[in-house]
Amino acid sequence: MEQLVVSVSEMQSHENYTCKKQNITLSDLMDLVGKALFDNFINSVTSNKEDSLLVIAGTGNNGGDALVLARHLLDYGYDLKIYVIGNVRKASREMQTALGKIEKERIIFLESLKELSKVDFSFSYIIDGLFGTGLKKDVEDIQAEVIRKINDANGFVYSIDMPSGINASSGQVMNIAVKAKMTAVIQYYKFGNLLQDAMDYSENVILLDCGILFDERNPKRLKVTLSDYLPLLPPRKHNSNKYDYGNILIIGGHPGMMGAPQLSAISALKTGSGLVSIAIKKQEAMYFSQLYPEVMINYYDTLDELNRIIENKNVIVFGPGLGKENKQNEEILKTLLKSDKLLVIDADGLYYLKDQLKSLKKHSNVVITPHLGEMTRLFSAKKGEVEADPEKYISELTKNEITVVLKGATTIISDKDNMVFSQAGNPGMATAGSGDVLTGIIASFLGQGLGAYDASVKGVLIHSFASAKAALNNSEMGMIASDVVSQIPATFSTINKINQNNT
Image (cartoon, rainbow, N blue to C red; front, side, top):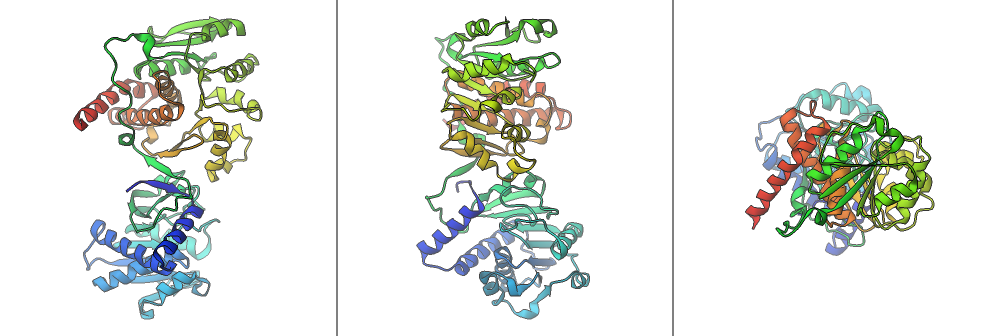
C-alpha cells in the first residue's frame, strides 16, 4: 500500500470519487471505514471482550466513524460505553445515520460541562472519535474538558484518523489535543498526521486500507523511507579518480562561525566527494583554524578572485556560517544565480536570497535548505503562517524550478513535479551544525551526478539514518553534529549490505 499524503480538501475529493465510482453513498463509505477500524482494533489493540472500553464520538464524520466501529464492537460482544459529545441536532448527515443504527440506551449524550462531570473516563481503552479533519479553530468548552479527561484517564487511547485537537492541515495543537497511544489513519496520511506537533501526540501511527480510491486529478505526494531510494549511487569504477566524484566549493565562514563550512566540507567528503574546498575572505583568514587536512582552503578578496576559484568547481555551497553583514555576499549570490553551477543555498545564504526572490527566474540547478524560521523570514511571513500552510510557500519557490528542502520534525522535499515527506529524523538532530552536515551531503550527491531533487531526497535520508546511528551511540540528548558526520560511512556500509542482500 503506497504511503500517500493528501490535504483535507483532497481527501474529500477521494471520498466523493470513490462513492461515484462504486455507486455508494458517503454513509456506505463510512460503514466500510468503520469495519476497517474494527478489524484493526481487534487485531492490533485488543480482542478481549472483558476489557473496559469507552467510545467517544463528536458530531462530525469522525464521530460517525467511531459509532460504526462501536456498533461492530457491540455485535462482537463488547459491553462498552458510548459518549456522544456536542449538539447532535447539528451533527453531519452521515453521523446521524450512524447514530440511528445503535440503540439509544447504549449512548450517553453530553452537551454541557455539568453533564460531563457526572460520567466516568476510567476505562482500559478509549476510542477517540471527537474531531477528525474538520477542526479549524481552538478546542474549547466541553470538548476541551473531554480531551483533558481522556489524557488524565491513563487508558490506551486509539484515535481515529487524527488525535483530536490536532489540526489536520498543519499538525499543530489547537489549544489542547489527545495524546494517543495509536492513531489509525484512514487510507491516506493527511499533512497533519506528519507535521509539527503530530509526532508528539501519537505514539504509533498506522495506515488503514479502507477501500477509498485515489482520484488521479489530485497530486501524488509520498511519505518515504530509505528503502524507497536504494541504491543511492552506482558502484564506483576501479578506473576512476577524485575528479570523477565531484569538485565542491563551500563559500562560508565568518568570525565565530568558521566551524560551519568545515562541517559541510567533511560531510561532503564522507559522502564520497572527490575534492572539497572552502572559500574564506582574506580579511577573515586570521579567524580560521583548519580542522580537517583533507579539505582545501582558498582565500579571496575581490569577486574576480572568487570567480577564478569557482571556475573549475561543479557544485557550489553558499551560506554555512557566512554571516549577514557583508554586502559583497549579495553580489556573490547574484553571480552564482546567473551561472550554470549546481548550487546549494543554506543558512545565512538564505538571508541574501530574500532580496532576490522577486527577480528569480527558472533555477533547476538550485537547492535551498531552510528550516521553518528561515522560510518565514524568506517570505517576511507572520509567525505561524508557514507552519499553517507549508505547501503554499514551498510552491512559490518550486514554480521557479528550485528544489526545496524544508527541514523540520518531518522534512518536506519538493520540486515543481514532486513532493515527499521524511520522518526518518530524530530530536537529537536539533543541535548546532546539523543543517551544515545535511548541506554537505546534498552537495556531495549533486557532485556525483544526481539531479537536484534526487540528491535532496537521498541527502535527507542519509542524514537522518546517520543521525539515528549517532543517537544510538551517544543518545539524542548527547549527540552533536560531528557525531552524525562520523556515522555517515557506517550508514553507507549498512546500505551496501542491504543492496547485496537484495541482489
